[in-house]
Length: 244
Image (cartoon, rainbow, N blue to C red; front, side, top):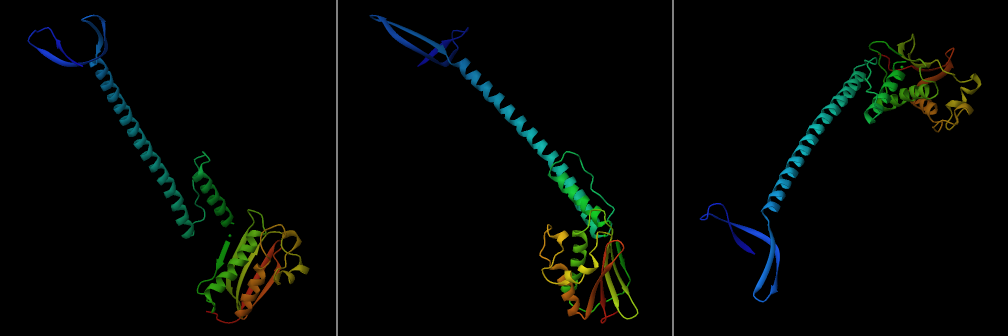
């Protein structure tokens, strides 16, 4: 119910709200006990203001934290991108700095660094203006299979040398490694489809890598020869036609 609350000045009034309960205690006697809600309203207002401040500060801190995290994340992504661009440019000595917190980006950076360590062992010796007349995709498959075979069957840190050079009657492309190699009596067999050495049967693959290299070489009137690299294996393709 609404009551008129009289302040110090008799002619000044303030309308307020009182919460309470009234009962008749005797005939024509009504007892009402109540409390002005002004303090309750004031308390609620203060709580709403406090909650608003807390929410605002929380959102501000979250926004600042998000910006800082985003900036750090983008910086690390940029560092990885720069290193990958360096790989494309041929700078295999560049490495990504690890932060040491073993998060997803650290693990990615470590994997890229390990790959670079492996590639840095991948030496390339290519003479200028050497051309081979053939199918670009098939020749790419030939060389990638030779390199993959060298990487798959050697230990990390093993040196792999890729070379392309002119010979008196042919162009010679070779991939040589210093790994365990292939026994002489097995070298002709590994050029067959689905043949795998006993030592490599636990590794992934179907025994098609070198067989495919041999087939592509035959399509280009070339020959594939496997020999001892002392130590390791050397795969040499001799292209008789299309020399530049």
